[in-house]
Length: 158
Image (tube, one colour):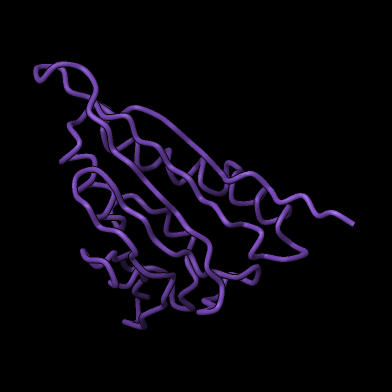
């Protein structure tokens, strides 16, 4: 029997900012991440991406508890960010689960009217085993990356 792996969740859109600003706003995730998407029992106070390869990606609960989400693999401002997403189907951190998120920031337009094409990919979803298709659907939905990235893009609206 052959198992068909789900395609990565991909989203591409343009924001009205140069790559430096787009990258900086993306990694300041606590500014735009929806607090409803929290694994902290006390609720979310902030989201942090440590700015280096090997850094942690985590949320801080309102009570100060640190809840790991993953780790930074590649940190190349203002062009590229690659991270491990280690949240299980139960929305808890599993250090053995290693799906990858890659985000690239590409300049478009002239310096006077700079914009940035943001390309997002969440891949290796087969790591979810029997639940890979369900997780792919959840992660790609309006309640998943589509809505979250919409919150990021809204940071650049006039």
